[in-house]
Image 1: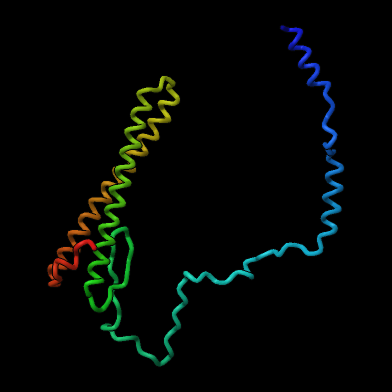
Image 2 (image 1 turned 90 degrees about the horizontal axis):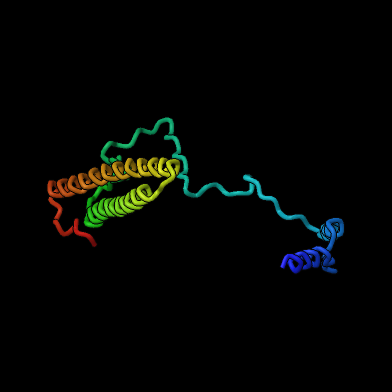
Length: 187
């Protein structure tokens, strides 16, 4: 058996290289010749070639020297939305305004609930992994991950509490403004 194995190893080593193999020098010469035949270099783009970012808002022009500030009644107050977003409050609060505001608050709460469920699943998996590991170093790493996941879950639960309060605040504000309840229903 050893003899057969040694013959196979010897035959594999003694095999000549394939006839089609090229040396590194030959490949370099061919690449150099190819580059000489290329007539035009690739276009290089710089920041000067790029257009301004269209998502940026254009700067507001300064008022003329003699112009007065707009009256306070035309200034639009801002509305704080769930998730820390600030949006300008429209002059007329119609059904679309109330519906959009409530739908965005509910959507933020739904996203947080889904994230909390995913974190809870991650915690369950980490707890199972910790119990099944024998290596103390691996257990310690899993414990650190579990602590991070617990902290994140606590943060998301606080966020959900704030979002639930924001929804009840919107409902309360709508009641005070005399908004029909149907305007706040999911649509």
